[in-house]
Length: 424
Image 1 (cartoon, rainbow, N blue to C red):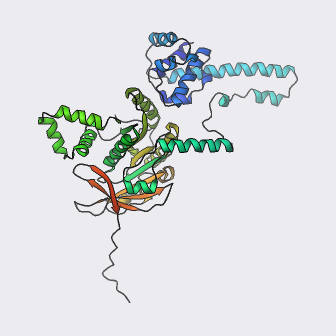
Image 2: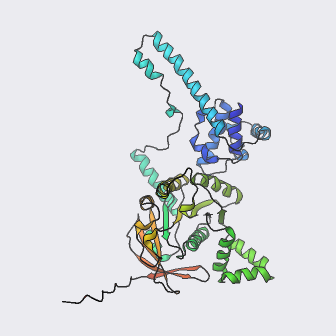
Image 3: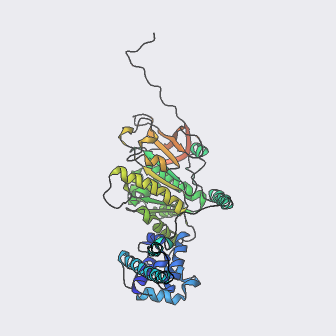
């Protein structure tokens, strides 16, 4: 195994840039030993299992476990593997070129047509790179649907709002629910409620990627909903109460399958974080994720808002299919939604029309009026499995951010007629 192979494999096993694993062909690695190890890593990655030295060493194809751990011990620290991957690719192309030259010489000796020989020298990486798409025959199609039905029965995310769940029938693995709303419409607290509700009912871990709100604020809101306290009540309790240890124990039990990732991440990094959570949690594994919110997802390059959101909306759907989990993502509305009081519509997703194209379900939130006691109204804007347009005032305590799951039908107020109009 050469230095570039070792640098790439050890860096990936240490958890660096693991999102590159599905993009790297096994053929890039010249040695059989490295190919066998990397093949095991790709299979673990595809199965959403931890990709580390211990997990890889368990597979007999990787050789003796001592080889893996010895390699890890002797390796030097690699912060980025890009240059090593580039070298592996160059060496792969050189090997392929040598093979083609030998084949071309044989064709020349046999009197093959010149154009055929020239075409044979064309280098193409298609054979090395695994195809991301798969062709299904009719039998495979029905088998796929059986797998889908099984996955739906085992891992469907319900919002926890009964009226809405009756209409949408839940978010299945590989599907995306986008939640639109202006500030003050309880988007983040709804996401917390959804994920917590899912973690309780499924027994799986719900992972919340909080790209905007720090973990302390999320914990405070969870405690408010759990205890029925105001934010000041929670803060004062932790300042002066002698029962803080008991409260912490209660919280740990109530939210035992609720994971928070605090800080900016890119969509490519999310599978890596899922693996880290699976490694940290003993027993339960991640089954669904939530992202707060789309506009804060890290992207490369200097993109304008429309281009950025368009790409993210489509990549989010791809991510959901790749990790085969339900995904909820919060998104802000554009300025046409005004102050959040007017009824919301699907085209009001901020930045791009791609939001409405890529999501499987879209919920919108707005306030029933501009008073302090206004209700929060949820509207079904897109629903792949049923009707749209239904609106419900949800039962949420604005002081504690607690949802009961109840809701009642909302009827928009009738428009007032202009003063200068009259019946004929």
